[in-house]
Image (cartoon, rainbow, N blue to C red; front, side):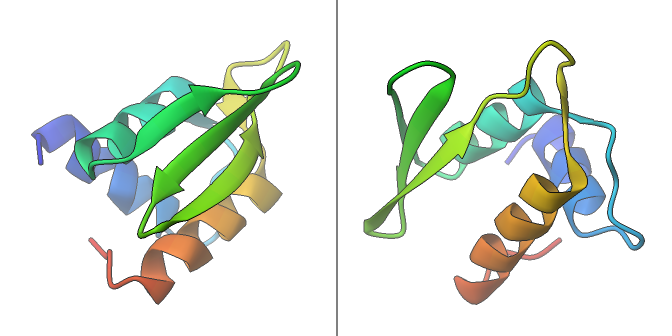
Length: 84
C-alpha cells in the first residue's frame, strides 16, 4: 500500500470522524486493497471487496465525503481486519 493510501486509511480511522476526506482518495484506497469498482445508476458505485458488494454514492457537488459515509466505510474495513 502506498503512503497516500495509508494516509487516507489514517483519516478514515481518525477520531472525531473527518468530513474532509476526498472521495477520489477513498476510491483509490479501495483499488489498492484489490476492490473492483463498477459504475451504477447516477452517482452510485459498486465496490466488490471481501467477497461482497457495497454500494456508495459519490458526493457532489463537493468532492469531500460526508461523516456518515466515512463512519460506514470505517466500520466495513474494521470488520475485515483493515486498520491503520
